[in-house]
Length: 427
Image 1 (cartoon, rainbow, N blue to C red):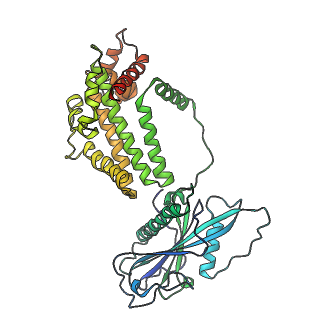
Image 2: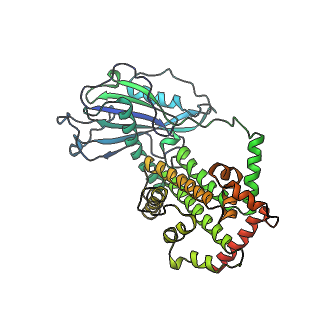
Image 3: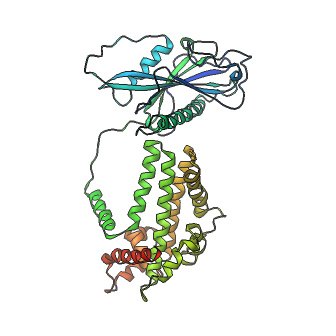
């Protein structure tokens, strides 16, 4: 799972006396170049009740927050750079438990790191925040929310550190973390009197367990032949796969949204292109398509307003609830904020964008199945036999294929040549 998971049962009694300091320990898969012991704190808006002017010391033995920061919520990060064995593994539990032992005062047995056994350094981040006593239940939800709050700050630090010391490592994201340790203590208490537990996050990548079976190899061959023949749909699905990878594996929400937007735009543009190509078969021409795709007359949003409903039917009104509305707001508008303002989407916004892009494709497929009589080639090239059998329209499509003059194996090549002629005119 990508969001913080269910924590294991806590050790000891749940701490509930007054506000709590919640600490999360995460081992980053890529080093973060802050020096060992560096502390960065971000003050958050609002106040935390029940502190009564008490000094706030996020880290044991560390500095007290300034008087201006007292009674305010905060996130404070401390960076640990630890030696790590080559055989540590993707969970990095030894590094996590080493820091846990340091901050709880319960030392672990010393380990002998022989020469040659150390691969490098592992960055462990101690993330501390405060949670008011009025918002401590349910525990699972509180841990999810506070973990996300802390990781937002860690992502900011990771991102901005690349501006100071450029490197190629990805920005830190929760999806890169396999497991976190959490600890809770009162403001005046110690970790020894608090609670702790394990929070599973994203399962680590495992070695290749499966290979393609015969049916999957056949599907691979179909996709390859369609791609090599000039199918734009394979290129669209490639962007959809990249969006899911960026979201689920890397936690790169910006890239996921941009890839989802590309996927939706390729689907929209290729569907309209195929229909325009099919419309001019009896009198070959590129003039109509050149006029439609001329950006001086408007972009994709303008085409969605005018070109699709007359051909495909259905509701293409972007102001009414439905797939086109959701694409407009959850995908296209969000993509514009990312690209033009550098906006960092939230987890939920990214998930909604991917779902809206998928729903738009399903909507277009359904409309094409209803328009087989008018656009048999477009429907066959987009949906194929299985899609038309599932959505309806296969009877009309199969009747069209009975015409000996139809050679489906040549359609994509013919379409590609026509589309290249259109592009040449546009440029």
